[in-house]
Image (tube, rainbow, N blue to C red; front, side, top):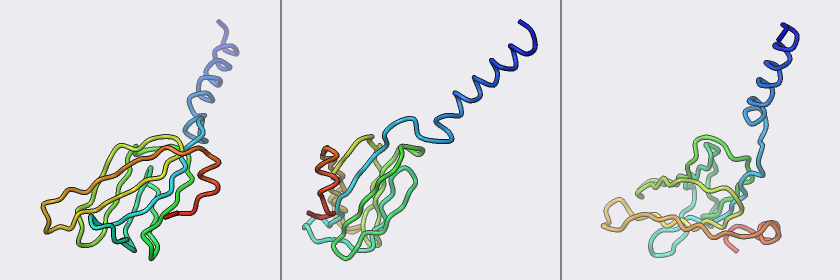
Length: 128
């Protein structure tokens, strides 16, 4: 193989491996949801993170993401006075329900993923 062919082959390999680094090679994740305490009361100003992108919940405890999948592959939720939670994230379209347990309780925080289709996502409002 001559140098020109080797160079072209190397260029193709670099381009193909950089594809997912520079832009998403998959549809990404769309998620919306709510954060509440174990009694069902909304938690405002909770920090919710998906693939490293952070949101702060509104006064109704609601959040919404539309992202390309990326690192880290985790979903986290935290609020002052509550037990934070970190779980593996999922790719797709989801309504996420987060229940954070108070720090002084024996309860555990939990995350529930409900898969929805893109039409449901586009029509949905957080906390609806």
